[in-house]
Image (cartoon, rainbow, N blue to C red; front, side, top):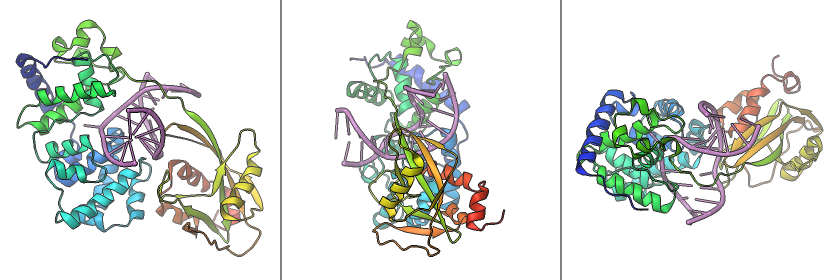
Length: 374
DNA sequence: GAGTCGTGGTT
DNA sequence: TAACCAAGACT
């Protein structure tokens, strides 16, 4: 598709109205208080595929725990993942950690300020590198995120899927052409903020929009049909059995290996549950295969639903214990621990397993079996 | 370049 | 409820 470069008059109107709107309506986000490069970088990584409100919550906690690049670089991976717990896409946290160590090693503990150097950092791609260069360092680079895609799809009536290579090429070219030199920090944020607050996905606030006279979708009544998206993806239903094994008042947890989903996070053992198979029997087999423990009793715990990426999982957790009074030792490459229930708070679990833990404290049988106070 | 990487909110 | 998706990156 071919979209004409906006005229000088249209460009000037957009600059005036969107920058003016942003000056009045910008949310007071924490990283906007001083635009410290470290703050801008962390916020951009956290906000990837993440809603603003959650991002801000995690950001405040993160900055308290890791106030600067040096403290982040010096932290352990386990500490980093614990701070990230619940936010998802955990490679972002590992990349943040690795990039901080890279900055200490190669850039005197500072964020590099050139686009090519930023692009070399793990976890920093086309969007994030330009966001940091423009917002933190006030360099003239445009950004295209989901907000800009949606806003441009409406303003310029882009009628093919915005994620398609052709549309991406068009949108980036428009972003280049529209960028007001010397104002990239405010302009890029203005586009994204406008997309988030006024030109949202579900309900574009056209009645409040200052540029409806320039908006091709508004003029043709197609704003609600933009942006065009690709094929819908169906969720895949999966079921798992999970064993909370208690012995000598401690609970068995193991660390997931590198390179898999939830890498380096902690979990309870278990396995896939075949359709129609009895969960109480499956959990015995799954635990024996994974740990060689032979579980003696299984008490069903509340079922947990956990959706992640394209999967919709149902977890069938069981409270289990071992016949032997001695904590078994494992000879596996996998890291594992036997811990009292309160100590599980210090480890990072996936959201599904964290849900199981949060319900454990309410299970009186656990208190009895584990010998904890009722 | 299509698939994969989480999670909670919204519709 | 099932599907969509929110300041994407990586393979």
